[in-house]
Image (tube, rainbow, N blue to C red; front, top):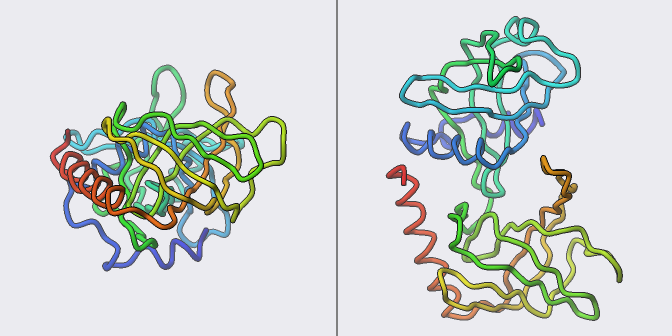
Length: 245
């Protein structure tokens, strides 16, 4: 993770507005994305999550990392770098002004709202997290395998990141697998495309015990209709997030 952080924390990857930074951090918080905390100059890291983001009051709240780390120990290591994912790309921010706090009855870390947030856009196509209800059920139609249904997490004209239940029966989904079709509806418009499984991440266990499998899907032979519909949605969604909607 340290090599990614070294590439990420540069001026060229810095988000230019505080509002955009706050929007990105709130989405990361709502999606419960893992945040890797890297103490400056230390060859160790800690796993945490964002618990709350309060731009107006100039603070963020993070969970105390596990295994067995105290808030005081983490505070003594600051400044730290926070490294996480958003829309399938790496996001980084400085964690400073750390102090022990309580959040909903548990031990937590309170830190200043970051002065800068860094966004490592590695893909050609810009991705946005989809709003609730904008994308219907996503169906992956496999060649000789059982179709998989899931929900879209983020979307671009080049593909999507989705989550689905792990494959039961048949042969497991694999990186690079070609799909006969991916089907979904975007704000009521039915869209289809050939596709390829770009990557499969480790399953995530939700608070209710459900296992979900994050899957990166790359569109292939994209139709003009899909290209135009998704591109328009990405632009509108990005404007909405910038406006805090």
